[in-house]
Image (tube, rainbow, N blue to C red; front, side):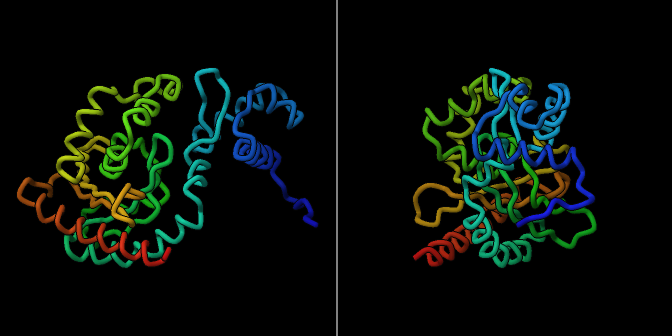
Length: 255
């Protein structure tokens, strides 16, 4: 039997209880959260707001709270993510050796991507380790190659106004996004030119373990001042090798 630690921090305990409730039950209102914890509605609201800030929760258009990107990663399964990270790391190191820039692997969870593996290059000026970070999928190179594999209905659902009620200015324009993703499908790669961070450029490619639908993405991130159209073909070719090899290792591991 677990004993409550004598140094327990009540606010942390309450936040964790709400995170578990969201993951198990899928939805909570402020009044329900307050009643469950035995606290004031204002306290419950502050706790839920902090979970939203840290991506453990998201708020729907009806003002109810649902599991956020961090908890949604469970849908990808922690075991699958751990396997992907383990198998990808050697190939990310090889990719860094080829292009001398930082390399990453991302997975899609709802309308965001999680960076589940990252290997930095050794240059003094470089893009830092992104592992554990979460970004809107439509802004990142890896996110765009994953969104490009979705059906129109799935894409429309991810652009729905109610999903972006708490961040309307970040909502992607469905028409513009569809046009951008058509180009991604035609090219076989996606580009992020300063959309997630000023001065950063990234190129992403899909990882397809069975040769069909993309399950993850591999990307190269670099300072924009080192990016040029002349470098792009070499980066895309190196990404193709990394995506192929990671996909092959995943397929063998599951066989």
